[in-house]
Length: 289
Image 1 (cartoon, rainbow, N blue to C red):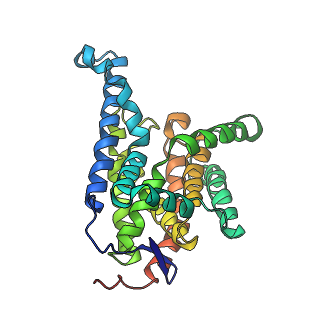
Image 2: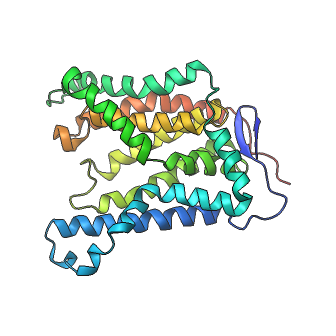
């Protein structure tokens, strides 16, 4: 069960110790997803013709690749089912995907990603970027619609991170450090993507990735709390950033330069700092006991 105090969503402390604690959940999520990521990376290296990756057993790992997508979701489902039985999963889903959230928050999660990504190209042009922007009608809008549907269906990690883990962390820590810790965990979780041939599939390095993930993590944490724990809206926000960023061809794999990525990062830090300030003003850690 959850409680909301001063706008912060916290998990009730259980009277008895749960079979799977928060640390166990993180170990399970990382173990499942990184197993899938290892299978994907090995398969990708095999396709490049790397001699060391031509072993026959690598092909047998293909079914495990789905764990890279659904590892956090599976970990959350196992944890909820084991700790709270099926009734706990139903209670979680009713709260996480309720539709009765203020219209201004629906507007924010739908508009913010599109607005940030649309501003990237004029900002990057001012910063010296030379790549031409894609055409809005023929490229951006059709791609955004298709990508948003894909990401909404197949990138389900917010059920685990903000849906399950964040209320647990906020029941132990003040909102700002709780969100900082989860953002750090979320960042480390994605590092296996840089083990792919040639590095991250989007073409950017670890430095710009870290600079991007930090503000997004705090923005999503603030939205989660301001919407009384709506995983649905945080999910829409997260996948909106993914879909619009790819549709606007901002990543270096499309543009051939990093100016657009750093321009996006600069834009993201504006709402990111606002989110950090709001979380920092929301009080102390809950009293233990």
